[in-house]
Image 1: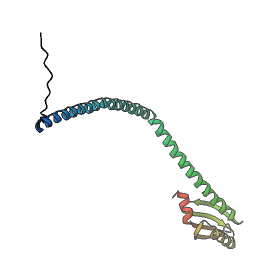
Image 2: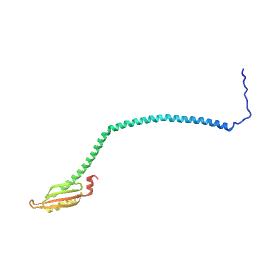
Image 3: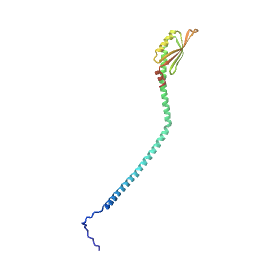
Image 4: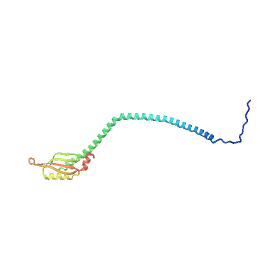
Length: 187
């Protein structure tokens, strides 16, 4: 039979040397560091899979949206062209109404006895070719043009007496004020 060994009691309290304690401590801490490092590496590995999935989803979404943009590309070019044309029409419409007002005002200012051969409105000036029956009528018309707010300067380029028709042929050039020139060119 086996004999049971009696329990021994050591009353000498011998301390373990520092090297043994340090080695034990280092091995315990080392194991703990290895476990923590493995947990961090495993977490990073698993997290990478989720990032890869997100990246694949983003690439597919970009591909889908590129297909939509390419599909609508022709429509956008057409819409932009239409928008540009509408802007141009709007600008020309306001320009035309302003020019029409100037022409109507000049015709309204014209006294009896003046017959227009031509009335041209350019970007920055107005040219008038007309026949006048008297100098006083011409003087009244020139004074009315001088008082018109859109006209800056007036010059009478030609006065020719036509004895055969008892009329005076005139050419007048009137320069528009800068505010009216800028408004008509859209600047």
